[in-house]
Amino acid sequence: MDSKPKPVINVSYSYNPLEETLEYVHKNNSLYIGIPKENSFQENRIPLTPQAVSVIVNNGNRVVVEHNAGIASSFTDNEFSEAGAQIVHDKAEVFKADLILKTAPISTDELNMLQKDQIIFSPIHLPTLTKEYLNKCLEKNIIGIALGNIKDHAGYYPIVRSMSQIAGVHAIEIASKYLSNNHGGKGILLGGIAGVPPANVVIIGAGMVGEYAARTALGTGAQVKVFDNSIYRLMRLQRTVGQAVYTSVIDPAQLSIALQEADVAIGALKPQQGIVPMVVTESMVEKMKPGSVIIDISIDNGGCFETSSITTHEDPVFIKHDIVHYCVPNIASAVSRTASTAISNILMPIILSCSESVGGADSIIFNKPGLVGATYMYKGKLTSRILSQKFNLKYTDLSLILSTNL
Image (cartoon, rainbow, N blue to C red; front, side, top):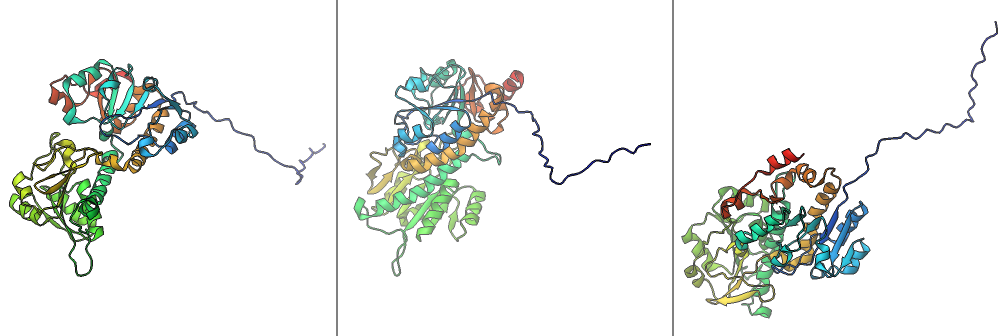
C-alpha cells in the first residue's frame, strides 16, 4: 500500500492574513449647526472656536456661522471658513439649522426665526425672563437647553464653573486697574513692597468666584478677608487656596469693620431662588475709604451692595460716596477669547457625542443625562420646575416624555 505524500513546507512561502469584514454602523445623524452673531446682553463670546468647528465638521457635521459672529472674540470669518464652516450674512439663514448654539439668551428679534423642533443651546437669564417671553418660546415648539445647567459626569456645572473662575481672576485685575493713577485711582499697588503694606481685599462669597478671586489676590501679595454664611464653603476655600486666609460668617458688624479697612470689595454671593441677598448697606459703603473699588460680580442677579447699579462694558464704572463701582453683568465677556475657548472646550465633546447618537433629538437628550436637567422646555412643554413655579405655568416631567417617545 502506497503511503500518502507528506506535505512539504517551504520557508520561502509567504502567508498574508485575510481582511476580516467587521460590521460597521454608518453614522446617520449628522448635525446641522448654526452659530448666530450675538447683538444683545453685552455679549462678546462665541460658543465654538474655529478649532472646535474643524473637529465637528471633520466628523461629518455641517456648521453655519453668521458673518462676524466671532469678531468680538478675535476670531475672523476666514478662520471659521478655513475650519470648514459656511459663512452667511443673513441671520435667518443661520436659524434654519437643526441645532443653534448661543452664548446669550434668545433675543426677542430671534424669536420669530425659531423653527419647530429646533434644539437651542443658550443661557437663560432669570432676572429679565418674563412669562410672555416663555410662552412665545413654548409656541415655537423648540427644545431649549440652558447652557448654565448642563452637568458633567461628576455632577458639576462645567460652564458655570469656568465662567466663575474667569470672573474671580478678572475681578482682581479690574481692581488693580482702578486703583492705579492711570484710571483715576489712589495709586495703590495690590501686593505692596518691602516696607509698604499691601492692599486690603474683602471678598463676599466663598463659592467658585470668591475662591479664584482669593487665589489671585493672594498671588499678588494682597491681604484677603472672605465672608460667607456657609461654613462648608469657607472651610473648602481655606483648604484649596493653600494659604492662611481670614474667613468669617457674614456678621454685619464684622463685615462693616472689614469694609472700612478695604481698598477693594468684591461681591460674589450665589443667588438664592434667583436673587442675590443684599448684605452691604449704603451706610456701610459711605464708611469705606475714598477711592476704594467695589466690584459687584453678583449684579447679574441683583447685586449684594445696596449702592450697585448695572453698568456696561463700554461705560463700566461710576462713583458714589467717593467709591468706584464696577457693576458690569457677564463679566467674563470682557475677556471673550479666553471665555469662548473655555465654553468651546466644554461644548465640542457634547456636540460630537450628540452627532453620534441614533434616534433624533429624543435620543440625544436621553443618552446624555447631563442634558436632561438642562432642558427647560421640550416641544411646547415647560420641563423646568423652577420656571413653572416662578411663572405659574404647567410643568411636565421630561423623563416621562422621553420614556414615552423612545
